[in-house]
Amino acid sequence: EAALLALSHRIRQSPFDKTSTLKKETIETILKQKPKEQVFDFDKDIEMKNKILNLDEFGNTYGKESLKINSEKGMYIKAKKTENPKSVAVDATIRKAVRETGCLEILPEHIMEKIRVAKVEALYIIAIDSSSSMRMDKKIRFAKSLVWQLLKHSYEKKNKVALMCFREKDAKLIVPPTTDVSLLCEELEKLPTSGKTPLTPALYKAFEIAKKETKATPVVILISDGKGNVFIKNNLKEDIDFLSSVVDSTKLILINTENKTKSIGILEEIAEKFNAEHYYLEDII
Image (cartoon, rainbow, N blue to C red; front, side):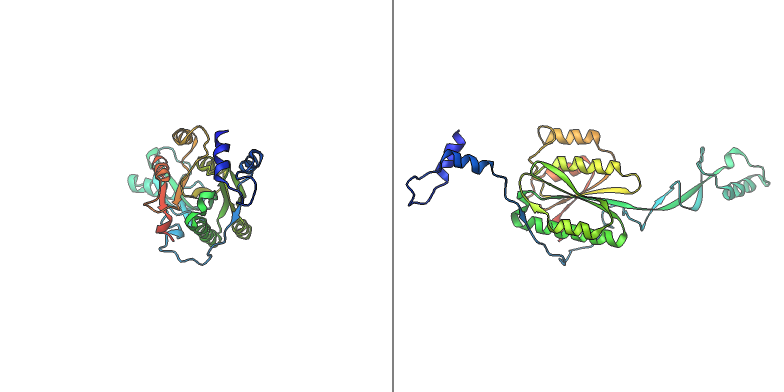
């Protein structure tokens, strides 16, 4: 009631109207209206400051060009000594036996295991903050430009991408894991902004998608200004504690759309808690 009264004094009608304030019913209607959505275009040819978007700078590089050492499948490259070999390297075992005994008498201590190397596919789970706060300082434009570059990289490396957005009350999976970059780009271009920032719910949903992936190596890339105000539990601390209890070792990359002086520190805190990589957008674009 007090809020309605205060708002009625703030929102003035025309000075030529008979009444100087809006009716209570009108104010209630305004308050119940859904926040207006806005769609922002973005620069698809924006210059990057460095090669960070090659993902070669994102710690371990994932993708079909990447290699997984000691995989159960793949090309046999060398052998190692082990007590319980999964795959016996016969050639290396024979050489070791002959070298140590002078004959073909193979003893348990001569058994060698094959080390294989296999190509690894990646799944990039990109979660982009499309809440109202991202409209300020063209943050959503820069964020979309960054995602565009990630999609180009994924297309070149033939990786799968899942595209998420989070705004208002929850996070949504816009495009399930796919290699269809055209579909991803189409959804990115028409992505609107509105409402609050469900930051931690977005992290939870991204990690759940990662858990379901059985073939590719998932990498969660979250782009946000860090101004979360919708929670899974009651507050940020409880949410971080909850996520810590359910999240596995999925690789997490956080890209902060605020600069270092304006950042409120939430993404930095999450990065420290989950041993994630954290970058400011100003360092990239």
